[in-house]
Length: 168
Image 1: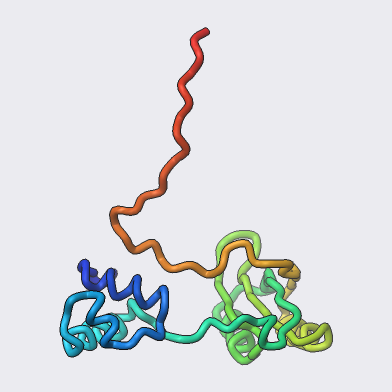
Image 2: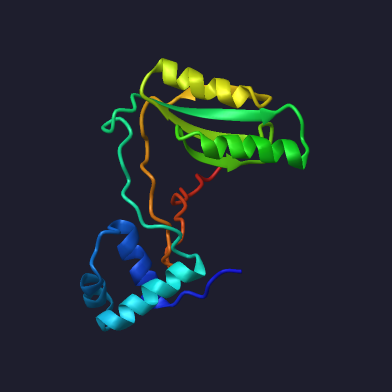
């Protein structure tokens, strides 16, 4: 069930998505609330699960991870025990920085970082040892960085303007 967000919550979320390092005093100034009320609001957003975590977004290449790959993994067996074993293995690999269970031709979409080909090969070997078939895609570059959620309810996707039809 979605947490009911009001205008102040939306302001706080937008500000924190833009810069999670903002102080409580800055957030209070932005929303017009007292620092105590602001702190209470942010805590409520965390406790409700709307804010899952606040962390720094580290550039993998700048941190020494020359290789960034996406891996499509398909399990060879589909039963709860087998899926749990594979997911436990994924969680145990520090090179896997994100993992999604997906519907479609593949079962999982993983994002993996590695310092070199040997480290990547070791991570992939551990995944395939659990009976998964993997297809690896090398990330060449970022087209759009991770973006804030479009929280503004008034913001809608604008379609391209229609050109008038020419008479026949």
